[in-house]
Length: 100
Image (cartoon, rainbow, N blue to C red; front, side, top):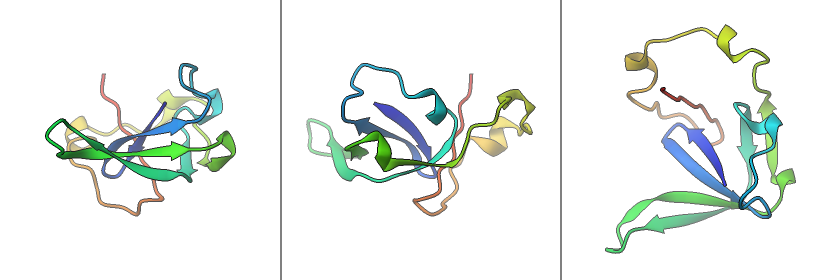
């Protein structure tokens, strides 16, 4: 399973054959375009919790922008500006934010 950071929040992509293996290193922190089938996630009350992508093959994940060589060299923004509200941007554009 891959966790994607999108404009609407985190989304998971289930990649065939990668059930318990780590994601390929070149995908970590990269901006990607993913092609797959969209599925829904419901709770026991049949309330929609979110969506997930089912990806057939690693070739269905295209790297738009590789991960930076040194992630600590990136510009810094305050968490109150960067991570509190997700901006509405096109679905094909992905952005991520993690707080430790």
